[in-house]
Length: 188
Image 1 (cartoon, rainbow, N blue to C red):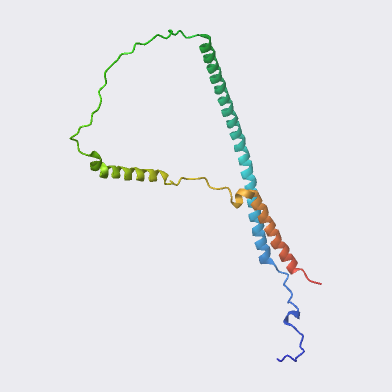
Image 2: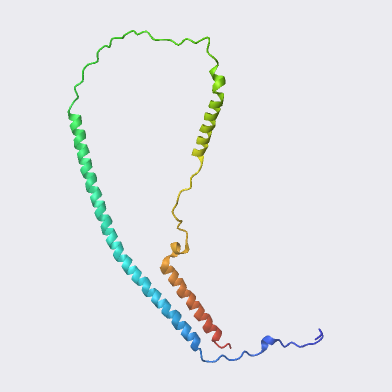
């Protein structure tokens, strides 16, 4: 071929072969996917109904616990109020202050011993050891100890939940079916 050939026929201009009308495999796959979707929707509905019953029981339990706590708080408040009122009504009997006699006692004084040796020179290594130990203890207190934390709520299911995931799966299947149908449709 040279550049002077004026052959404008492209391989894309050829007619595509007709598809056969037998889409049995595709219909079986669509039926299986549809069955899976129906089963998942049924499971979601079942989970919703079971959780609704559990939530009702939990709300009743929380309400009874709240009422019990309120009753005990009221009882404690009444007891404390009665105690405070009883203490306020009774004055305490106290004796008037009296003068205390002061006793003079001689105290001993420390006088330095002229024959004593210098103790600071002997205690220098011991003081350094104690100082180093205290420094290590202070540094050990500053060391961060890892603790467990709760998992963050930043996942996909945390944002949309299982029903949202099911709706998106249905939408995806619909897009697949629509693309298949549009691809198989004859062009004019």
